Image (cartoon, rainbow, N blue to C red; front, side):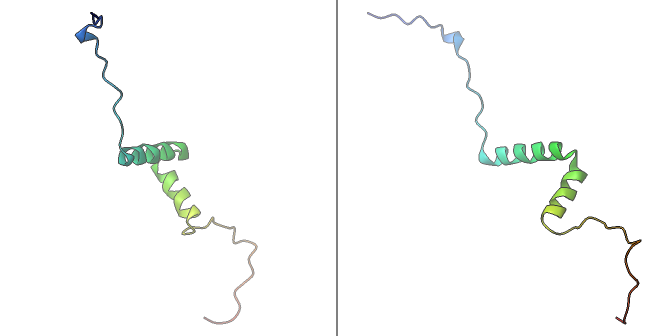
Amino acid sequence: MTTHTANNNDYISPEPVSTPFERQWQQLWQDIELAGGRYQYVQQQLVSQGFMVERQPVDNMSKRTGSL
């Protein structure tokens, strides 16, 4: 005969399992924090996707020639 020594009150619940959707949100917020905030994250995304380019100084640009 075997006896069970574990007490029924010793149950430790497992870590909650996150869904793929929750992991996506966690990753997004980690990326936002790494970028330095929401505004900086959006700016980085716009540049990386080619929707925004860095400003260039216009002092050394030549005058426009021709007509539009």
